[in-house]
Length: 427
Image (cartoon, rainbow, N blue to C red):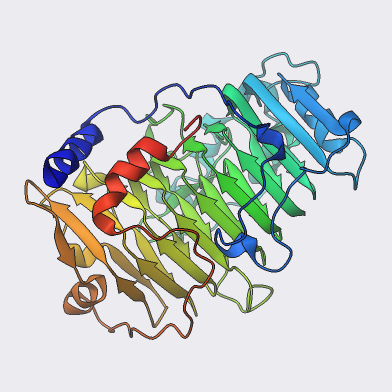
């Protein structure tokens, strides 16, 4: 009976992963706090967000102007913000829709940009001059509308099918909770061409759906992250005109974060923990727990880690298209990743040694992994051994720490059922 139920759960991977979330029920979702053992965000003072908010600091918002006003209200006071319906980010101060053309500086146009910086004539040199400056001003015009800062002691929770479309939430404070939200299509109208990014150059964009920037004690729970269907882009200079950056990035010395029961799907660069190889503000920080999340049809960074002690456990990884997949777990500079009891569903064309990628790290703890490749039954996989057999240099197994703040650690064979039924908004 166990394997029959398990096979049924795997069949669900062929279905859509973006069903409309159900309405919240039971206790007031704005007053929910993180459990005392639920990952790194439970350390020291724990994470309570705006649970202590006075009645005057509880807001319900339905549009960008209301969300911006609620975030700015009563600085320093705990606040709860309920999001209802869809909030569009690419709007003006009166919530009227704005297009990319509306944000563009008078000195910028994409055809002129393509003509000026074509590698065939410009060469492998970073763009500079008046046209690149006009692109940067255009990008700043859009950022002024689509990037909203989230300060300390704040809870933002969705009511029903609550969507933040084309917005970037940038968390900069301590003690923040974000739950039951659909983050979709934080797109950059003005990507920059970088001819030095990789062998052939790349288009790089500016916005993530959610950024944690120097933030501490943050709980990101039961949300959905994706490109919102905005996935078809042309190629210029032989490279995809990439209008998206990350889905959820944890950078600039952020610390004590729990990312739980989210759905992250249909995207390339998914979750970055630590944004520079330089030992600046990240050493001793970037302590993050990533558990019971669904990573479906993502290309890479699930997560990619620098410096941090990161516990990656009980996550479900579902890959359908091997051509769009690069790796799942990125072992970066001085990272200390403790991965356990994760489950991978892969095409037979994806080698097990490709699930981990070397980014100048030296160690990885990886135990309890199960994988289904092609039509096979689930089987135990030693991720470290598979990586070391296929790559040089080898990674060592000793990460120098053992997680203790774990509310529940499920065996890997239970992960598909738990994640498919429990991850995402309204679940």
